[in-house]
Every structure is written in structure tokens, then in C-alpha cells.
Length: 405
Image (cartoon, rainbow, N blue to C red; front, top):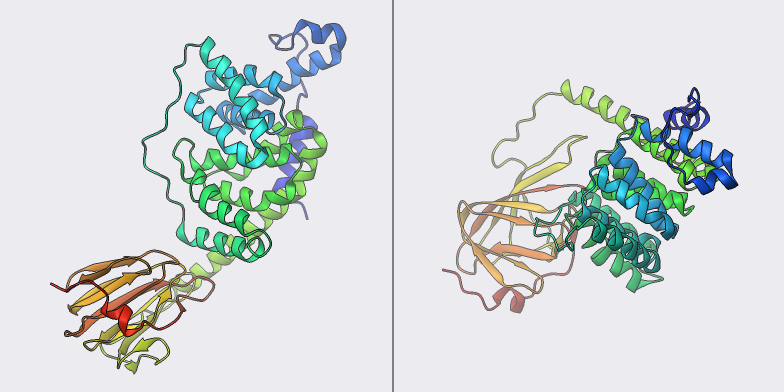
């Protein structure tokens, strides 16, 4: 079966340069190249810069990001200066070049990044570009569900063997680096893809290709990255990435088709009305302390993941410690209650208050010691699960140090 990745990438690699006119391009290759390897000079001027760099499937700015990323990744320091200059001419900001180098220190090693920073500084000084400072822009927030799934994968596959590496992956690589605002998420994904292909690591490509397209990179642009890297990383590495991208695109198309089918079914579904107080049950003893009542529970149908219920807490009752993979929102209907994050202070709330518990935060909530409380709880399910119950809250933990106004 022919796929978009194979059709676009292979045809582009095979036909690049067809129809180029001799001597109609301004020379980019140094004269020494023509003296030693005139064929290389021809392909450099007429094919690489005369055709590939002009292809509309990838903007010149993106091509510069991909090229600089490939050069940093492969340690080609002698070529970095000219392409940093070209990147600046193509609209890449100095801070973006610096952040590209910072980012690739994690993916291709500190020595390559330090060498690249030295070369970039020479270009900046020649152009009278001031030193780059830390950005004061807001940190980038990524999809909570995707991050929770990624963290679970790291904890399951990396932590048992290399716990420190797992912690650094979660807290520094994705918890800090990927949230820095100096590169847009799409561009950060783009340079990561380019670096992985350039160093011959296609097995790492599926996650980052999906992340790139989730961040706005189109399928055509993804395929063109492979075409461009044929010249900067070599044909074998570009070709090795083609079947990987092919599988990524095929899977995305299948999921899109499934989502469209589910959407069609949902559009024909009936509205569900859950009456107040219906299906009332006592809260399971393993998850609650006291006679807590759960009523009006509801659960959406796919592709929606939201569900919830009204929960009534008599005075002095509470949940056990628990977490939610995608977080939880509590709308306080009546009474007074408390909520507490593990290691944090106990906080009081009352009617009209809204409480947001972030994903994977261990916490409990319940009524105040002398006042009943009712809240409406809303949470999304991840892989069919909306909550993970843990140990019960002890009387001492419940008593805490906080006071209720």
C-alpha cells in the first residue's frame, strides 16, 4: 500500500534538481570546491541551493532550523557559522538559535552544543548582535493528558533500571527544557526530529514526529524534512527515516478515521438527562471515611472522557488519598470543607468555590469537622481510568493544623 510518507519523501528525493538550468544560479560553493570536486560544486549550487532550498514544501526559516540542528547534532562545527548567518537572514531570532543549541545539548550531547555556541557567538559578534538573555515570557504549558501518559511510560520503562535518568527526563528535560518559551513547541519538535534523523536514531522518531504534528507541523512539511536532510545527513539516514514516518502517518490516519466515525455516531446519539439525586449510593468504605453519599453519577461516551457525580459529605467525613490522571475540578454546592495536597497546607472552601486539582497530585477532600458539605466532582478518564485510590486519611492527618473560618 502506498502511503503519503513514501510517495512524498521518495519522489522528492528522486526528482530534486530535475530541470535545473546550467550556470543560472549564483554560486554558493567555494571556488576550492570546483577546483577539487566540480561535480560537488554543481550539485551544491544547482541542486541543493538552486532547487532544494527553494522548494515551497518547507519555509526557508524551517530549512535553516533543520540544517543548523543537523550540523549541531553531527558536530560539523566548521559549517555552523555560515548556516547560523543564513538562519538569521531567514528570520530565525538569535535567542532561537541559542535555544536550539541548548535543546540539542540534551539530544546530541554537551560537547556538540558547546562547540556550536562558540561558532554562533562569532557570527553574533560579527553582526553586532547583543548577548542573548533569559526570556521573561510565560512558560509553555503542554497537554496534561499527553504529559501524564509520557511520564507513566518513563516511570515504567526507565525508572526501574536508571531512576536518576527517569527523574531528570521528567523533571528537567520535559519539566523544564520543553517548557522554555524561547522556541515554539512546533520548532522545538522540528529540530528534535532533524537531530534524531541526522544521528541515525529513527527508533526515537515516532514519539517526536507525532509530537511535532500535534504541535502544528504538517505531514507535507514532515516529509520535506526527510528530503532536506538527505543532503545534510546523507541519503542512508534520510531513507531509514522514511518507513518510520510512513508508520507514524498511517497510525495517525487510522486514529483520525476512528475519531470521525465516533463523531458521526455521537452526532446521532440522544441527550442524556440524569435527574437530581438519582442512583444514590454510599461511598465505598475503602475510599471514604464516614457515611458519604454519591448521587447523580454520569459518564460521557467516547470520544469525550469526562465524568462526575454529586458527593454529599456529613460533618467529619472525607475521601481517602487519591490522584487523577488528568486532574479534577470540584464545584462546592453547600457547606464547608477542606482539601489538602500531600505535603501542603489544608485549605478551607465553601459554597460557590471551585477547586482544581492538577493531574497526578496526591490529595484528599471532605467536609469540615462540624459542618456537612456537598460538591460536584468532574474528572476526565485516561485509558478508562479517572482516579487512583491510595491509603486512607488518618484522623491525625484530617485534624491538621489549619483552622476553618
